[in-house]
Amino acid sequence: MIGGLRLLMRHYFMGDWYVAARQMPFINARHVPLLPKVAIYGAGAAGNQLVAALRMGRSMQPVAFVDDDDNIATRIIAGLQVYKPKHIQQMIEETGAQEILLAVPSLSRARRREILECLEGFPLHVRTVPGFMDLASGRVKVDDLQEVDIADLLGRDPVPPNQALLEHCIRDQVVMVTGAGGSIGSELCRQIVASGPRVLVLFEHSEYNLYSIHSELEQRIRREYLSLQLVPILGSVRNPGRLLDVMRTWRVATVYHAAAYKHVPMVEHNIAEGVLNNVMGTLYAAQAAIQAGVEHFVLISTDKAVRPTNVMGSSKRLAEMILQALSRESAPVLFGEDGVHRVNKTRFNMVRFGNVLGSSGSVIPRFHEQIRRGGPVTVTHPNITRYFMTIPEAAQLVIQAGAMGQGGDVFVLDMGQPVKILDLAEKMIHLSGLSVRSERSPHGDIAIEFTGLRPGEKLYEELLIGDNVSETEHPMIMRANEEMLPWDVYKRVLQELLGAVERDDYDRVRQLLRETVSGYRPEGEIVDWIHQQRRSDS
Image 1 (cartoon, rainbow, N blue to C red):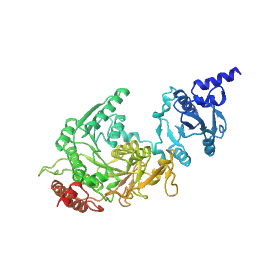
Image 2 (cartoon, helix red, strand yellow; image 1 turned 45 degrees about the horizontal axis):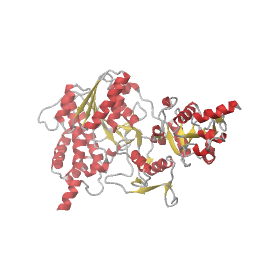
Image 3 (tube, rainbow, N blue to C red; image 1 turned 120 degrees about the vertical axis):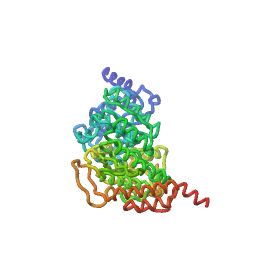
Image 4 (cartoon, rainbow, N blue to C red; image 1 turned 30 degrees about the vertical axis):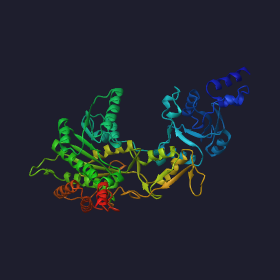
């Protein structure tokens, strides 16, 4: 009797009012806090730690475990019933659970995807915990819980990196990243720091972004007792003098050129800036690399450079072609110079990949925000598809691909299978514990609206041109063989292109891109803001 009372009081003071109120009649149920009821997927050590942390935090009420281990199914663990996955609906009805927290940190991504697909059919908000190191201390709060990692929906486990390739162009070298504060550039910087450079030059035109990544890396260097110099440089890739000064001053050995405008509709509406940044910025960075004796130059490119239908994609493909042409020249006369042959010792290589999860302006954060606000979730077209990869995986593969390049190589990352954006939107709604509102389900929670393809947007993206593709020593990286023109031809094109941009002659800009970039097929009228305004005024 006394032992049972002690156990019940322990439940009460540990925050497990759910169990205590059911078994202690002298506790008035009206005084039991109405906390969100959650189930825990995984009744192992991590799940038990999570239950203890939630009870201590008194912000959520754990009511059940779900586990597919037959040895513990139907048992009582930590005062909670363990249900099999096939009995989840029964669990919801018996406990009133509104949410389920994943406590299965060691599972492969493919297995996590299977679990998420199983949970999609139930009215449960699915979330994960940030890290189990904090569970025992009780620091987990509702605000610390995270939405499901969308990478788990892709179901593909990343290939472990080849450490020798990661370090080949970085270890004890002076490395420079342009666009260092952007989504890709900042992750490149994080990966580079881990590979032991002597100096890392952060080149960025946004003061705020530069401050953010510099502060983050400084803290990491102090925390991990790393010995490297960080050099935060404010500058634009459209300033060739600034680029050359930086590369020469620090004797840069490796450049990762991530600075670019990547948002398709934004570049379509601002053609001049897109061309100046993506084409001329790459040209100026490449020429500075030749003049400064840089050994390795890696361009971060995009799947939108393949048979482009927009200015962004065609500008990135032209940037690739410029580097391919320069890589064939041992002593080129650079653009803007007359008769001066520069010794070229730089290996120029390009890495092409698709969308990365969580990058600025990407679809995933937008869907999360739209769901949080109650909808609607906006999708451009019911059949639109995209390739996706996590930012850390993409950055690691970029570094490894760059290390394999011999000069003029275009590398293509294995992005897995394309994802239908409509399916992704529906999964995110379901995993938020909500239902899709449609003609068949008029009482659903969140509507999906189709807004139409935006200027320059494709239904699907391609990563390769043709079938002339070869394997490399890395299973996730392929080498594509692309057509190109001689360097002298590009110099003439660049001169004309720059003149057309300076005159705001966007018809000529589009014509030059179409004549130079193989496969460029612009769709629709020119939608540049200046072009449209001048036409409306005339």
